[in-house]
Picture 1 (cartoon, rainbow, N blue to C red):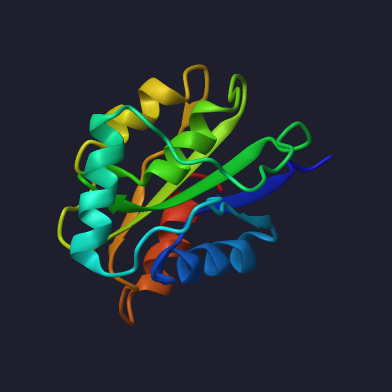
Picture 2: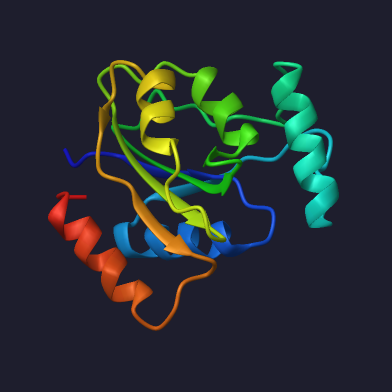
Amino acid sequence: MPDKKIVVYYSLSSNTKKLAEAISEKTGASIFEIETVEAYPTEQQALIAAVREAKEAGKLPELKAMPDLSEYDQIFIGSPNWGSTIAPAMEAFIRANDFSGKSIAPFLTYGGGGLGKSEADLAEWAKGADIKPFFSVSGAGDESTSANVDKWLSDNSL
């Protein structure tokens, strides 16, 4: 029986959503969008201030729903880079689940920060998981993104 796969992602500007949809199409994985109960501001400075304030207070956003991961072996986790790491909505999702014995294939979109401390944070939050190398892309990517996703999937037997 083949491994069951799901793409779980959070996206505010749709860059991560586009990448999540492409990964789902290429792998045949189910797809689930993480949504917060309270919407984040869309204006960049207001968003930065809201995220910084919540982080300083040690608060993660409340999520509308979560997928049941029990039937999945391979979980693709997608997030934008906010504040040099995974967005708080995805952090809330990751911290709320047990990934022991599961394989995580993380992907990240960013505006200029690259991976930041995403790798270390994911390793801390998803203990017991087999975490594959991150795939990351600036913004929505470019004409080479599809081929780069294919290579990442192939190189990591995803």
